[in-house]
Image (tube, rainbow, N blue to C red; front, top):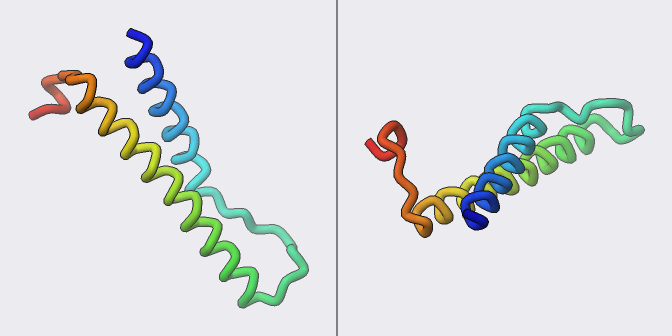
Length: 74
């Protein structure tokens, strides 16, 4: 049961990061426009990398625990 709870914790973390992924940082950084756009793109990529990593952990944990759910496993 502890492993399932840990897996759920990772899922909750992934869900929280998912909400942040779509958020624009924005604001006045005092940077030139091109550099600010590049920084925003880089930040967005980093957030997506974290999200995908967490989802991978959840999927692999799901498989390792041999969890089943007819709606998911179809």
